[in-house]
Image (cartoon, rainbow, N blue to C red; front, top):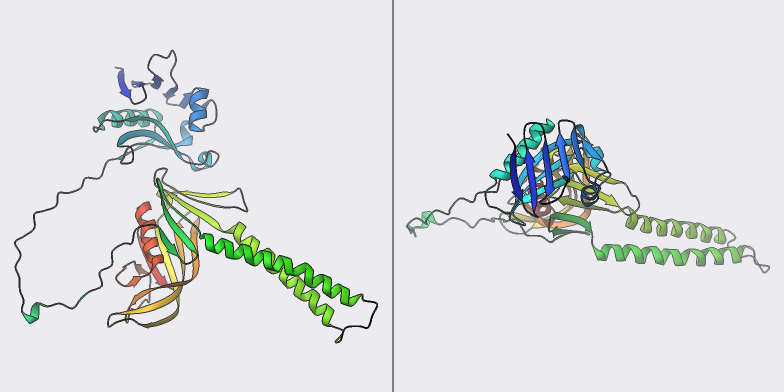
Length: 368
């Protein structure tokens, strides 16, 4: 028995036990045809979805997903592609069709049948249901001295954007991004130019003194010292420029469900799907601390933030040498523990909580 469904953008999806097709209403041939061996599609569809011409084998598809998106208030059916294949196109998610209806029954039916036909796993991402807020209870006021509690430092999660030392963490329409601040890049650029200008000056003055026809400079080793300083300045200039080129930009894409990291100095991109990530770890080393009040201390620390993948190991998102915030007094950190912003409250730890929240994994902190 064949079933025909109508999707957005004038698309028709038809499927039975042996095939699954999608075409524009009125066209003579389907844009996508699926059977047990995989997908075949037209060149126009391949170009629009950044796929290789011809088709996809079933083993190049990891999962079929039907999910609700709050961004466009629509149901989407698509494919989660194999990581090796996806690396050539810049993302694992490949959308096939969408529905603008509130009911997801048609989208779920189309996705499940496609997964069954391809013998791939199926995932349904339903919209979050917000529980109604219960009516407030009748207040019971107690003004006795025993009922008065000491004030507590309740810490809520600070919204993005956040500045974590020389890093900026900003929100994107599809997730969040970590990158160096403009001030840090400008400082490195000025440092590099400064040493690059001084290098030939010191080198020329030293060589001029060495080969001068007049009396030797005293002491005689002074030109050698100048050449040595010129070499150190050249290395400092190169190091400053390399810092700019090698600094990573990390994107956490909640739509494609991947974390991506790339550097200006390389075309290579580190990419890991959310399904392969286990937890976020933020570690620190205390530099100094001083009293703030009866319950907290002001602390300065160096922090490292990593996302752990069993396959790739620790993916470093940032390292900052000077982060200031609050630390609970007499806090003992003998082992790794779940992050509690009431115990340790810095911009870096708020940002780590945002990362874990975006990916959907736990976050831990520890002292090195």
